[in-house]
Image (cartoon, rainbow, N blue to C red):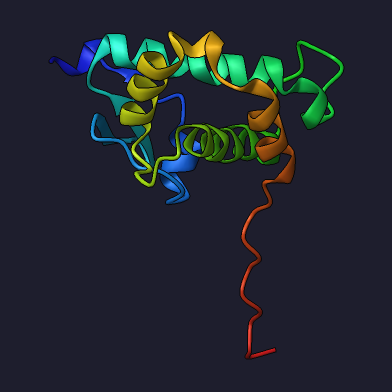
Length: 138
């Protein structure tokens, strides 16, 4: 697939953090930075749909009553990492591959809307970032 057709990965924060993986994700350099792109348009749209549904259905857990504000980095991490933890738990999956989880969720629950959103919202609310290691030199 040509690079022009690749979509930005909806779960890029989770992939960069090493919290998840995806067989369809490709890292691309962009100027001084790095981006993650999805190599299949349909898969990218499915992931974007799941991401939007997690954000929408877990808004209360995120403490986001106001709409229209861009999410902070911490909020994006909670949505992506906590949301994927919730989906993984709902599926009983041990594999952290985002694409495989989305496909499995669609098959098992008859679509993404059928996911157990209450359990996913609990996972989003419970997710905490890893603590930074203390610098021993200071």
